[in-house]
Length: 247
Image 1 (tube, rainbow, N blue to C red):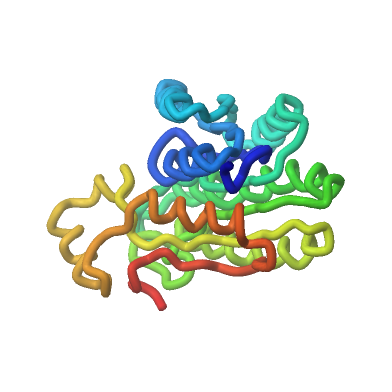
Image 2 (cartoon, rainbow, N blue to C red):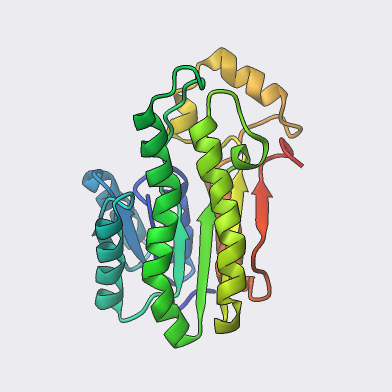
């Protein structure tokens, strides 16, 4: 038996990177997983195909979660398809890295809308059903950058710090309904985002990490699984999966 047998999960931004790893590990533990993506249908289908190889259940849930209407309609479709939603993982995120002097309004809004507003849109759409069933696990993917800041990432840091603050308030409001709300704050993790960083800069970053390496998406996914399956008395917390880069 899996630790999430008979549970329904939705992972935003599930077509690659950390989202893909989260969707896969939840499915391995028995959850039926809705795979949200914005435009990468081929990548999302590849995740679904991978999960199918070990008998996992999935559905594709296209939707731009930075748009309030699309985000809420996407959550509604998932609930209508499965009849319920038990685990929501707000993972979708982008970067538009520039120093403050070069940052445009569009760079700012794109990141805030995708990284932060989407968390509110999806949570607000999912929580009524969770309240009615007196059960829910909401896990928001923040970042160590939201805790410590980082040069050239004012928009990203603001969005990820906002996720932490939102998580605490949602946890307070939803606790009486047996809904836990927590945040994960990964450090530098081997994803497409990090792959774009030049090798010499990657070496400089590694030198600042006490464990001397980047994290793996699967290591973040394990923490998500713990909160979804075993974190019954944990809420309003931020769990750092960062190799010690921020303590």
